[in-house]
Image (cartoon, rainbow, N blue to C red):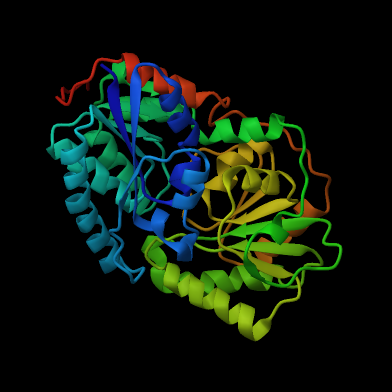
Length: 385
């Protein structure tokens, strides 16, 4: 009998980071994929992912609408609580052999708690990392709830083991999102006018040419300063003679402040060189990132996928503090002059584009599927300090 692997997708980055795992599970003769899509992955305002998932061929999907609107700390708690309630019903109906969860978002812990209290073995991708905010608390909490661990780096594996997890159940598979990066970069180049094919708002320079990308999300411990943070970044880049593509923030608490600030910039300032985007499919975004002169903000994409691609990254503030990074990253504070200098230094040089396999070699999906098929499953914990 095939093992039933229930994978829960909670947000747009989660899907891109697990897509090759889904494909490998689908193709494995010993595994049966059960796919659950919930939380912000279903919301159009953050770039609905469920349509992309279906277009990729994953048709059997359970949907769970559990987001409480508000984008603040209270709504995050309520969304998590509602997720636990709804997902427990889904798990009771599907009866999976394993639940697989990804990353460190607050919705992720709802998946982990529901599975754990139902005595369903829990597998976790991307544990053992450090980032210095609420995501780190969630990530480590999910690690302690999980029974099998698929981590991205050697240091992450060491951290998980130090937390008392069984070394025999902690596997340095690499991050599955690197699989998409590898496949995209190794494919024949298919350059196209990406932005013409996707809805967005703002201004595009004639001829465009070189461009930079901005991805700046809320910092949940610095919510009150979110507007100022965005303004600092805007002041740093607004006069740069280059096309800027500014991606919309994720659904974390504080995103409403950032969204309102971006709308104000768009409507009142109407910068001639900035175009705002909600979402791009994985391969298109990777090709888009590969073609950029640099990426600015505080997204882990700049550090993880960016290191594999070799695109220069200006990482702003504290959201990614402590996370392992490659040579592509320059760290700056919330200071317009400091941000502008870092970006200007990058733009004044030719891009090297050297790959760094810190977060994996691009073959994680198949490794994870094999382990899910062959590893002994248990939901009992023993200390290995």
